[in-house]
Length: 187
Image (cartoon, rainbow, N blue to C red; front, side, top):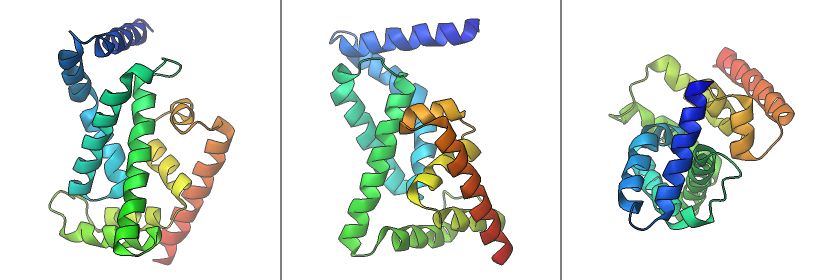
């Protein structure tokens, strides 16, 4: 419990410093170094492509920097940033599918297929099949599954990020796992 309170104090201090012009640059560097890897993998599981992930991650940090003054502290900074990253990733996919004139499902299917040639993808055939199964899920189930399964987030954290009930999350996660199991059995 003591570690958790220290982290909260550190986060509160970081937010204060991010809002002060004379400490902002150093505080932002700390923020990026603290969260870039977790946010990278969160975004990567949504957009699947390394280069696209880097672009979305950069846009996420730009948005965080520009909007830090509007952060009220009603949620954790981490949750607020994850919400921004999630929205940026989903907006990116929507924009990319419109540019390519294909629907979001086809875009994700193509991205999964492209993972075979992606030098940054270290998975084997089983992991590739899992990504294919996840790609078949509706958007919200996909987000919930990725956050719970890969990032091992607690339902309360996911609830704060996605602004939805814990009960709804549990139901969505259960449905997602059943759909993934069915996909893997069939393929």
